[in-house]
Image (cartoon, rainbow, N blue to C red):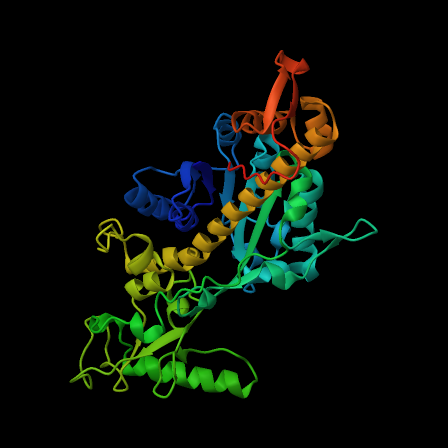
Length: 441
């Protein structure tokens, strides 16, 4: 079965691409409002995602669209550690979660996958995450991986259960992010109880062993810092460290560092690039002039990372867009500025992490469908006959899901129809007790 996804707050399509790499997901609708991200998305996927998910027009479009999984990397700016941390009080971005919730309530997808910054779990002393959990669990009827219910009816979870780090998924970037995966109780009923409490912590792959394996051997002078600016950065870092602050660059591949990895890359233009500096001396660098600089390049060989290197850190380049012969097919639209390339990669996701989450979601579907099939057959064994109403009440699923399960079990020979008329249809077990069954979606 190929599952259909919708891609909200799509950016340049990193979440979509991670799901597509499994070969089991097909995207049918997207929404993104950033003009430049839309251009890159269309360049990569051949479709323009220019839609405003907060509009009634788009919500009605989703309601008319057949799909299975809602994907959303909803805006992280209002949940980041930078700024005043307005969160849900931000009327332009923080509340987008509730527009997503509105879409979920109208369409009831079988599963939801959300991505956000690490700080989401601690924002506003945990109140932001609590609101998300109660909205999904109580109001929308979803079971969230990592969330259980206490005897008093309160939700129990460890915030760390939502955090996964890119460095554990085969790429040399220290990028912790919040991931939320949830499954519809209307569709899977009590079978959600078979789910584990943890998403994958790693993928056991080595895509790039360390930072040295993604560094370009030669880069343009424009990426090297001028001697004056490099001196300013060093002095500023010393001043901030003297005050006990953590500001500053890191020379991520400095001599003596074994298996170097990068810090989280950011969407910001200038300062974001300066978090991860590269030590890469080049011949004749001293006194060399940059066209836009009044001073020569720094003599220590310090430069910022290139957009291509950022693309490799996120798995866009060198992984997610290789053709069947292993040739690179990722590219930006012509005339995309360096600033936009940095911003788009910094705003995006690490694709191998998403791919692993998609594989985990597939395994959850398989577990729950198998559990439902076994529960249904157990019901048939314990009664002379079963009806659709029996299935709805015993498995706690929707009418549509009950019909689907009965049809699958009948076609596989596990159930035999006795009465075939509409709502009065009755079935009996078609196999003996103890028969092992495995029903795929």
